Amino acid sequence: MSEIKDSFISDVSKKCTDESQTNGASTKNKDFKPIRAKDKRVVNGLTDINQLAPFKYPWAWNFFLNANKNHWTPLEISMSSDISDYKNKLTPNEKHVYENVLSYLTTSDILAMRNIGLAVMEKMTAPELQIYQARQVYEEALHTWTYQHCIESIGLDQGEVYNRYRIVPAINNKIQIANKRINSILRSNIELTNPDELHNFVLAYIFFAAVFEGCWFYNGFSPIFSLQRRGLMKGTAEQLQYIMRDEVMHVSFGIRTILQIIKENNVQLDLKSIREMWDEAESAESEYAKYILSNPIVGYSAKGHTDHFRFIANRRARQLNLDEPFPNAKCAFIWLDEQVNLRKEKNFFESRVTEYQSASLLWVDDED
Ligand SMILES: [Fe+2]
Ligand SMILES: [Fe+2]
Image (cartoon, rainbow, N blue to C red; front, side):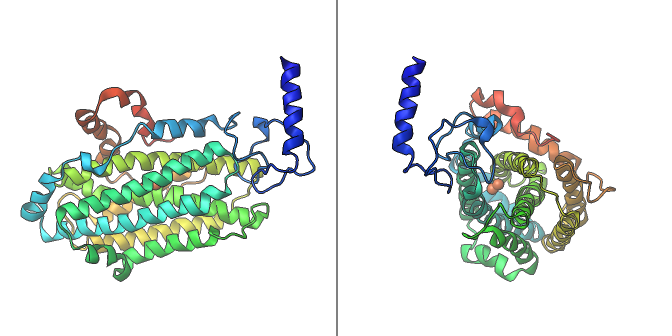
């Protein structure tokens, strides 16, 4: 049997020698050899990107399997009480918060989709990572649909809401910071074997996973969760809980991928650049909080929002094995993690079949 196998491989070898391509590296003039898991790399690998197994990163494949257990569409969640709440119960200040949060999130999620789908996926050289990222691309599109469904259901002026990020400096600034990162890696001539290019790519990945998704999104939903705690806009909040579930996985996967790239390529992070990244992110988040909460709403303030950003930033830094950027930060919203990780489960199982239960812990945002 093994002779037959060897002769088959040898036969294929002759045919493939001049034809097969690895990830950008031709196998021309090399003998065809079976893929060995140990030869795979997250980036700069030379193994065949079209061959899934053997796995070197089984955790990445598990992310893909688990992501498929959190499937929903925004049409499954009733928005009827939100329509009434928005019309009859929300104060002008609460409407200001609600509309601007949606405006910020919808623009951000398109950016997140473009980042992972156009700038990151093509750099990966192990298919088990690319496949989860393909799922992530879909999820970011699903999130954009979800915001659109909320905006449309409530009857907001779409031309106004979608253009708001262009005219509100505090929202625009966060988008431009992200644009700067994506533009620095969305180039066809990027060469990750160059240490400077690789370092820049890792910084951009840290920004998107740990700051953009890990802090700004994580924190970004909380003003609406605070309305939900008071019995308001519950449909929108439940939609965001489903999104949060995806985002927690995106953050966790991103950080794991970053750590693997650092390990495989012996990347020495420039800590000054990391410090500048946290400071820029904190400043932008503070300005954003002051704008959306220029008049605080019951149970939620700009100061609390920024304080909580610092608290979550420390969590992301620890997950990356980095020093906490804001050592004295305290948890400003004790209820938020519970809202995200536990109460969501309750809602989830009340409205969905219980077959997902076995995977429930996967969506808990913790220290990994
Ligand atoms: Fe998203
Ligand atoms: Fe995401």
